[in-house]
Length: 372
Image (tube, rainbow, N blue to C red; front, side, top):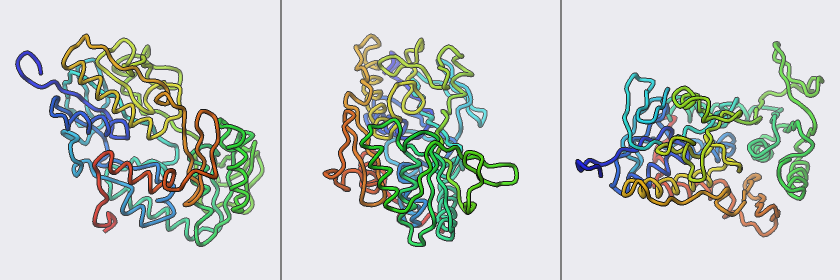
């Protein structure tokens, strides 16, 4: 509370994993007022998008959750933040929102919007994914460009499609999942080849003005009916640079933060998840933890502006990631050690993770299909 008894206001810029977690945890305490801004009207569970792209039921029932139907996330404003200063945010609708604390959680964008929606409504997003699902069912040849996290999960899902299109994964590096341990790389490549997924390593995908797809200058034969570009993401941080200046941004357009995830030089603004420059994989479970830590630190500051804050340890202090490969296979890497055989699908499966996320954020699948 301020001296006048008014609650302090926290503005959350972006409704991805970190933003929704922070908004949810802050709002349910009742100790601060929370406003969540996002240009879309939905939260997308995008780690299940590869499954949704091959399974219409998953797309319609589990992919998108409207912010207005969520419990305890504060006030929701459907608008994009176009400029952020130390005390105010200017929105795409022309309005300005004043705040005491702000959270930059605007995430990232893929070149291929199949993997992360940009359309404004949940209904549009689900229709978009269902249309792609139908396109895949009718395809004879599908190519995935990019052999890291998203590309490998997408190729694995495609390998289980009932219509059995020819699947090719093209990777510009010498291995799939090239930043992971050698055992992980070998397991993923072996998985693909056992599923008849053609693996092209040290190849680069291109498409010319006539729409002809090639790898290392040679035209693909046959030409693919569907192509997924899983070649990385870019941060959605231009509004931060505009308001706070170049000095808070690194050369990858990520916001530079201190050990408490505060923007350097701006102690009342935090940057989470894909938006910040923390050296770790940008994964959903880490974004949750960013949101949770930031909630606790903001609540400390509300009570005492000089409070000691809790620092973030990269990977939450325990380096780990898990990669799902279809419905029944996967890899877990802990402290650079690869675990395969004992890892249960119940832990790493996409739908299991979806259920855990729904419980954590107190969101629930729609009872009716969003395509109707």
